[in-house]
Length: 103
Image 1 (spheres, rainbow, N blue to C red):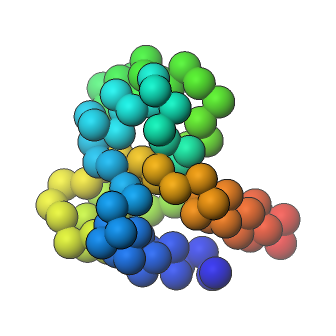
Image 2 (image 1 turned 135 degrees about the vertical axis):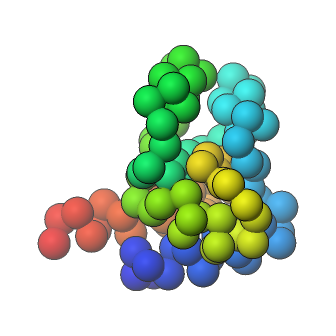
């Protein structure tokens, strides 16, 4: 999976109910339902602080895309935080992202 194909993949994950959005994703961190957070790289400082307050776990956070890119990928407006609930999918995305960082 190329790093840009993650956006297309998010649309598929939305249809399979493998994603949570916004505050719902943050709340689900406490119950370990979220295996990966994808956060818009253009979030405000206040939103970043809220994210840090909720993410006290070991959950990885990726900031690869803008709010507009994430919103377009999942056909939803003003999306800044996406939580991936499927562990296998989260692992695959992280593996690809780590591979791209090594190049």
